[in-house]
Length: 305
Image (tube, rainbow, N blue to C red; front, side, top):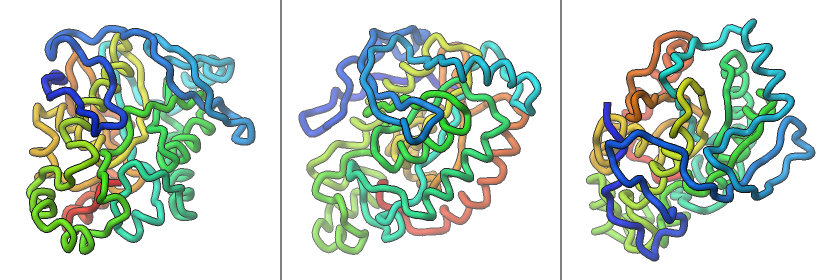
């Protein structure tokens, strides 16, 4: 297990979404943080879904549908949840046109393709028997649209957090690998080695810091809950790296970006992130994605998105 570290250097002016506060101790138990405005999409009516701002403590949307769903969940084939463990299911967003063209997206707000929407619907179906306490997502459209499919199916709110965005890639946004190599050869070599290639935007360390602060806000003091976080390749690797006690740049060297709309998981136990989650129904879900990860590992590194 590894405690989430907040020792990374504070985000510079280049970081568009770096949060204003970080954990005071990397070994302290997580506690509820100060209320901060976030974006929430109401469920279950897709036609009525809209973004609104409201203050939250630790962000647990509870609605009439939520209570009804929880009362029904006893009869569902739901994952048995250890009351001392918080489970975080992680999913990358569905496919976009820039994913298909293998272009860096960063903070570009690309919508899902038809295939991406189908992937989101499939993700919602796969999670139908897993009772979720809340669904969180990046506020970028590709993540939001993916998460909305799950939140709608579960009958719960979607909470959008800007801290869960992909790394900002600055002037690399919209470029292919070949274009980035031609325009920024030195930066491209740094990126291939696991580092940050662009001179503007934000570093992987800055992205990791804001993402882990968001994870702390979601999971702190929430033992026994199960959440879905829909985000991007960079943030998901930052979370898994923290669970293994690794910096995100080191973790990038050993694990490829997650395929679109694929699931992974980490847990929070005794205030620490770990990849050792309780066995059960979740293992069946995650096992389906292993072949996709093996295929991804055999491919050249993918641009951030």
